[in-house]
Image (cartoon, rainbow, N blue to C red):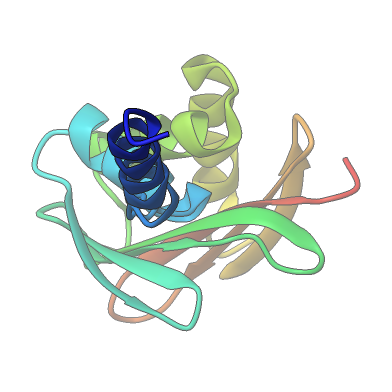
Amino acid sequence: MTKRLPHLAFCAALLGTLGFSVTPARADRCDDLARDLASRIDNMKVGATRGGIIYMQHPLASTASLGCSSRNKLAEFYAASSARKPPQAFIEMVATASAVVFTIPKDDALNGAKRCLGRLGFIRGNDIQTRYRKLDVHCARTSDGANITISREKDE
């Protein structure tokens, strides 16, 4: 009986250590997505997170953000340019980000962004909403610049 006591004490200590070990916290999908965007797009940096929105920084965008999933949206990417007619590099950055966020080919995201931003103007107006490949694309132009929001509904 005395020979089993050290073995029982060792087993109890081992089980106690395993039972109370701390597991590392797992970041949610939105944080992982923001880090993935920062790694795939040059000069993209992840900023603060507030209210389900992760603010991002990029030299081509005056404002950029990644909206996490909500009740009705899968995700949302927003970018604003300080130019009324955004440069091609800005459109490429938006297309890359939306391709990563929505797991679609970059060419489809690029065509959707170009289509929406190309329609802004005197004839069609300064606020365009369109759909392209199950993406909701919303473009607006102000006196200061232009912005684009790309999102997808959850039920699609």
